[in-house]
Length: 343
Image (cartoon, rainbow, N blue to C red):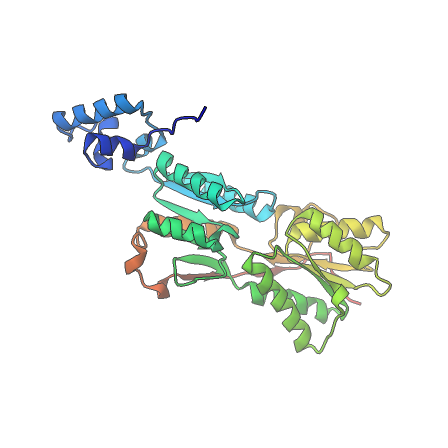
């Protein structure tokens, strides 16, 4: 038996012959609505068995503001960090974040986003990578007239406001740190292939080596996917080489932690025999031993800025916005700890 589709506020408005806003006002006992329209809305509500949702609470207060945050996989520490900071920042401003993990299947993902819009009537959406580069989702939000901000996108940069750091330069700088410590045999574990930051960090690594006239063999480079398990797999291959790297730069901290773990298991001392650097400055960077040298991303600032951009309403109509105002590149820091030593 097919489950009947849940009535939406749009369905109520259509049946009553009024606007969505009028339906919302009736549901919130707004006295500005005429008795005639109120009767039409309540009749439609009863006929459709419509159940008011969280959006009614938003409209009950002029200060409330709802934002969606779309992500693909919470196994990535970066996603968890961003989500925490977004919740913290929005709470401080009196806003509300509705986080939604979408499906790999694009049809299911679009249905999930439609439900998010219907149920919460979000005022805007924050898109984390790789969701920020999925064309079907970007087109869907545009068609639905939902303002959105993208975090670290790699394509269509003139489409909407976006926030990022210079991932290429950060990777270049941390690779140069290894070079300055005497390392020439430097391996790299690439991040998740569909994400643009993985390509930028890989390119920064390569260019730092080239600028120092350093060549590395292909086996010093492995593909990961930003997960601990992929870091373990890559590290096992690299550290089993007869002529193994003396340093490894991984595209995020989770994979760096995996490298350190595999090194410990194989009796390879870090940093005495192997220097390891990561990217993100996730909480685990100071939990593992030795503490990890890494790139610090301003995740709290990124979350706060994303919320501020959407709350400002400046880009509520992207068709009239100036693409030159979309770019927001924040700074980064190389955090030196004790996972690196000179040779």
